[in-house]
Image 1 (spheres, rainbow, N blue to C red):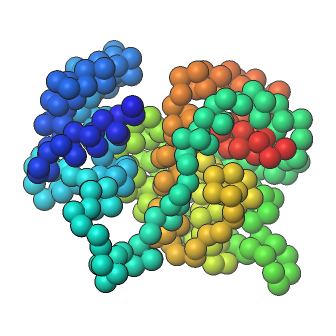
Image 2: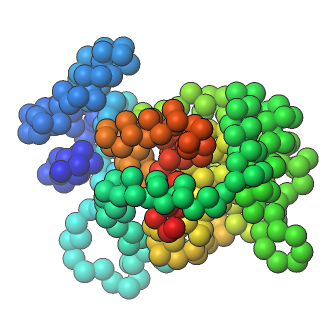
Amino acid sequence: MKFSAVVKKILSSSSSPMTPQEIRDQVKMKHPDFYGTPSHHRNVEKGHYKDLDHALLAQIYSITGTSNIFQCDKSTKPMKISLSKLEKPLRRPMMNSERPSIHRASPIRGVNYDAKIKEILSNAEKYHDAYYKAETFRGPSLYFHQRALATRHAPVSLTHLEYIYATLASWGMHRMGRGGSKMQSFEIFSHSIQALKERIAEAQTFDFHEMTYTKWAILKEIFCSIRVMASGTSLVGNSKAMHHMLPNVIPPIDREYTLRFLRGNTNIRNDLETEWLLMKEIISQFFIPVASDAAFYSKAEQWIKRSRDYPWDTSVLKVVDNLVIGSKK
């Protein structure tokens, strides 16, 4: 059972919303295997939390703040957590007039993430070999990618922004002629990033192991404020731009590989809020679970160290992306 399922089970058995502290106590009492885990002990040993209770509490805040299974009422302190309306059992059949309108549907409804996570973890070596044997991406696309990452700690510098801009162009984000995707002018792109200087610097300290509601909110602000694409869809271009600023928390996402692998199609509804939700869910429900697997994480770190052999393995989340691409080779 996953930790999110444990929290969901606890909330399902409660007649009223619960505080994180109340959920923690129920976990300790009824699900002791989820208390004092190796991850909790590591975080305490590293000084991230003062004791195991606080490590568990942080995990509760993280899972309830990043999953649409839960609803958090922050009008009280401590906040009260309940199941979202979509997760609550129905008391009676819904009338047509009561059904949610179609535009409220989850942007990735029906995706079996568990199966996709298992596929990647079970075939990591195979897909990694396939990715590098294909030698699909070389030349400018690799050079500018590496340079953009190397200069990211000066996130609004002209050099860094020019490298990101060049990377996206070499990755096919700007098509010449009438059709295809189009990027904004460099001036528009650069100006949008300048206004996000402090947010980007803060987000560069994030770790995908320790995402919280507040951290996701900061990433959303960045995603919704970047102006890199002139064409209708923002998800692909924005994720690729953000990846080169925040490689530890944002992977590059595209239609042909990411969406086709996860959803079986390349459709994106052109709506900034919907595209943000889609990106967040893909990262939180697929990329982070894969990257958090202990055996995979160790393997990815070894590949990253062998940069001459595996130049595209530039972060753990990029390794996951490479395996998704390798699955299609």
